[in-house]
Image (cartoon, one colour):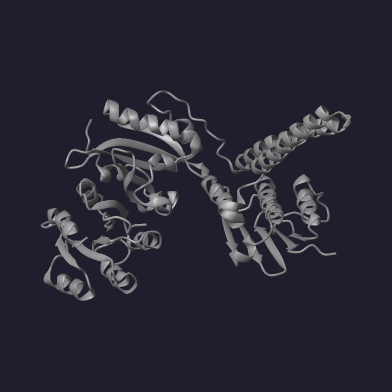
Length: 125
Length: 348
């Protein structure tokens, strides 16, 4: 489904529509990204992962049903090759350390680093 | 127009309990972004992520309307509102609001935001682009089953009973020609070939019109589709359970058709008479037989005193054809459970 060309499939897991509003045009213009799927919760993300194997997941920590860190853990167990970029307002050292320990590839402060995400995608994917 | 539709405001303005569908399209109307409800409803991941055109996921009768709305949106720079059915799920209507959504580089993509609409809301909703009326189905479960079955059967039977009979008569008539004449023999041979071909074509067409496509989605898929369509009308909670899909799908086509018809027939009975709140369809297969159970918690009836209607008679007749068994357990106030067991191989 996705390995035949260089363009990547990205899964965005975030319940904020405001973030989504900013993110859609940003990803749409990213020539490395072919297709984006949005999940607004942990549960939705699981259902997407049953259908699509993304190349990269942009993952918020604070989700309405369960923690994004739990999802990170699950992705690392089941889909080891998928890149996971944390994208959160919980940008303290504590969360950075936990996410790094759990295997996140990058960590972005949602309010400070948002514009750096496209570049990170280009480099990593 | 204001390009930046505010997703949060839009989402807040609608019932929170229902999912909304979201997709963005590139300049070629291919999807670049979808949300989870969209992915689940249209199953586009399995079609081809990022390759499917938005309109290809819509019901064939609504594609043109969607195309026009997209063209209007691009041409006139205005948001377009249009309703369309989901491909392969003709009773699920989604109202789409389509607007320009330029990327930061200025490439004008489209943002499509959709929500389910039901009966009355749909009727009250014209397409504001060109005034094309929407062909609204009766949004009742009974009408769905009745219309679907009636129309397919009408066309199927028309072809089978009428056209096919005429051609068969012509074939018989040609058979009466004197074969002594060489030219006549050639004409007869050719004409018979053509008529046989026509009969075969019509037989296929007739069968396809009357029967669902088991080759593509199987018996379990066809029942699931029926259940999904009924859910949109919400006459009752309905669940479809099955085990051993491989065993069920390995049944021959005739038995699959019989089982599917029985499901349709019994659901029709439940809608018409039972006033049920919950319905469960359970399909189990093993090496020797298939067992179909349809249970409802409706008002029930006394089988000893209630005359079988045409629906139940049909079920008995269809089952008998394959030397199967029908068991009916029902009592006033205690719902009804219909069990049909079909042997795989005909006995005797």
